[in-house]
Length: 357
Image 1 (cartoon, rainbow, N blue to C red):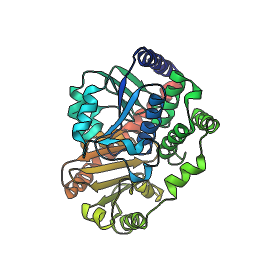
Image 2 (image 1 turned 120 degrees about the vertical axis):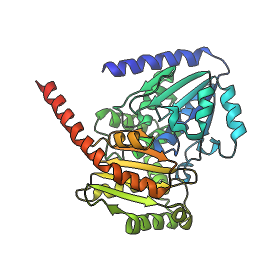
Image 3 (image 1 turned 90 degrees about the vertical axis):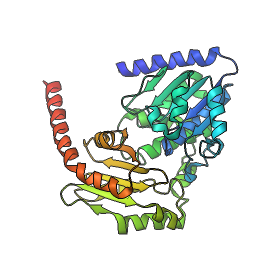
């Protein structure tokens, strides 16, 4: 409760800042390889700012996934990959920068140098642990998603009536995708109260679900089928599933951003598999997606060895090493990680017993 009081005080400070300045220019930045929560947050917040007289631009280090470009303003995002000079100009002229759905500029890919040099106001709105120090930190790890937290931010600054049907669709997209359709990280009643309020504000749930889950391309299904049939392996000594995917395979199946969304979760349905890691070879780096069951802190592995981090059960990482070496590194560090899990579980149990006593 104390933590939420701090969050609300920070939102009130931000409210005063946004309302005292005329002709304010804002830049919104999601994390690299933006997912439904990041894109939904960018979409909803850009509308909120624009509707209240603040010029807002969305900047990405890469590109938004194709399956999320139906969200309002998503197709207006400016990518560093093909419009680098415009990105630099927008950042240089911005009065305030909003970092959505990530806790550090390390999650901004090639935009990092520009953000390090930026001297204006920075705001983090996020639900990942250990946010870095910026001017406004609006962070709560208990919420299901950044979009759930953003609902509170928008409502407190501009009132519930500020949330339009398009914004409601965007916020629900983030809540839905970051919880696997409300199947995990969604046990707090407040999450469902927010969804109910979004329905009151015009959320078209059927429309969102159709866009998220019923617009598959045949090549995407074949890519996923190949990954499950030919690439999925189970570690002989640990409850660990690996799915390595090469750049050649992405090209063969006409890969589009977002085509592999949700794949890493599938091996967790296998009996006795507790950890799933997807390793995908991209142009300049290898991307890793980590998932786990129960109290297994997969973010520790991502942070320690793969330049990443995230939540207890969902994390990401990256490497500039070749895909084969990344797979080898996973296998070599598996013993360390599962030993850490035992230690972590023991500490959790001891802490729980101490609390009960």
